[in-house]
Image 1 (cartoon, rainbow, N blue to C red):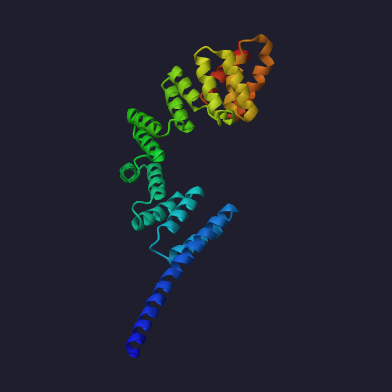
Image 2 (cartoon, rainbow, N blue to C red):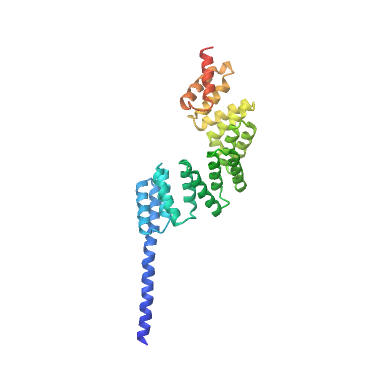
Length: 284
């Protein structure tokens, strides 16, 4: 009887030891990932990558260390190294949303559109309410020359989050590209929440729309506000120069803004009009 009980105890002890032994690498993997996250907070990217790599070696069936390494390499601009890391993460966990999104974006940058679309369809199946996935689909359609489909995806993303400022601003820029200034202005106005006052690009975009709609004093005010946010905003300097040019009393001020704008933003859409104005001033 005692011999049978001893065998049961030995068996139970073996199971416990095996269970603990299996848990130890996984726990160490999680600890290393936490260390890597901490290193990133202090800007130590190489140390963070080393921690993630050790975690992957310790627990090679976990997708998360590969996802973290891919994210880090992507942030460093080392896209060619990031792609295989994301691909490994997706082999280990085909439903990993961060890897699906980021890998699809990298494929788009490499013009591997079919692969990007496959990943985004998988991501959409996994989370149909993801705003980020819908916006990535819009980006893909735009890159492939399908503006109507891109607009459709952007508007569907607003069905999920109608207050997302960046989506409204993308729609505003697309409307400006079509020279639909009223719609551009409307989309910018929808985007004006708690962040708009500190966003020089959004202020510039709204000022452009207001200028085309004939609301020049309001546009001038917004350009000035943009410069109060960022004095190096070349687009605002150019827009302000063009608005001030019609007032002889503001000639010196307009010339200063024009020189600043051309120096800061020589390729801005307003730069051609600014150069024409400069030629007219100096070669009447």
